Length: 323
Ligand SMILES: Cc1cc2nc3c(=O)[nH]c(=O)nc-3n(C[C@H](O)[C@H](O)[C@H](O)COP(=O)(O)OP(=O)(O)OC[C@H]3O[C@@H](n4cnc5c(N)ncnc54)[C@H](O)[C@@H]3O)c2cc1C
Image (cartoon, rainbow, N blue to C red; front, top):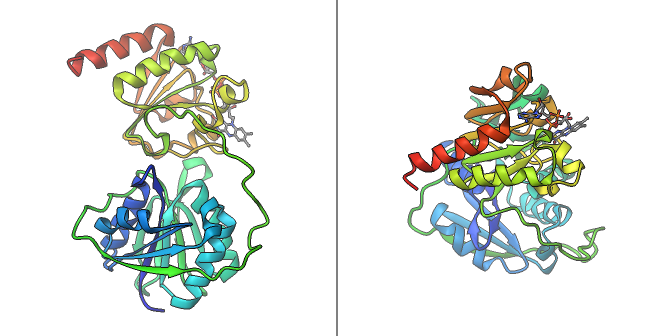
């Protein structure tokens, strides 16, 4: 083992995703010089984007990586890790990295902690990770044993992002992964309208549930979200009913968010929903049922009709912001 902590970095629109900057920040705080690993058909642009956040960058290029399939990323990372033997590999708890890291763990026979909200080094130099379990009712501490590297994906919003510094050195690596590594192929891509603010990385999320009564009810959510500068989320009930795209779904079978503020409009607060947002710093629940489960978990609860409360709240937010 070379003692290095690697961070697999993803970019979006040419910029480093915030959760990856958070992983780089945590890796640096653990007392090492983190190595950022970027993967792509042409990894140069991503390498330049991440260089100010990491002292060293490995830019791994291969035509197969263009598709961004977790299977291919795992194959390429597996080769690289076996050759260079870092002590730990971190990534964001994104759909792609969670898929790639689970496969990587299976390939290498090493341990993997997903969706972690706390990360330290144990006395033996191995990672010690904390992650929510039982729908956020408890936290488990994960100790790593057996083959290294230790693998962990970090929940967005749980760590402080790395600050920029002098640009790190970039080493370009050509992956030797064989053609046919992936059993899947991207047949096409559909655009997703996730609104002006990215849900996974938003500081404020305003989410709507079945209490909105229909897709048009989401206009209230959008108005309140616009007042806050927030992303829009939805419960599964709304997504299943076709009121909102699945990319907006928060919860066990949707996205995980860790905003500073989560405002839930007409959402009952079922455990499957809370699993996707239980690490939000402040939770506000608006519900006309005083016995709604969300009130047990919310920091602030407003018992009332959301059709009255949401517009009033939006007007107040705009007033306070001087708009
Ligand atoms: C395996 C599995 C995975 C799941 N994954 C997810 C997931 O990822 N995300 C998710 O959200 N759910 C998920 N679910 C579903 C989850 O258990 C709940 O069924 C779902 O979250 C309920 O959505 P809701 O709160 O919008 O609807 P409801 O439970 O119907 O709640 C609607 C709420 O709106 C309130 N309301 C109604 N009218 C008003 C009004 N005028 N003003 C204010 N409040 C009002 C009601 O009092 C009620 O509390 C999953 C379930 C399973 C089994």
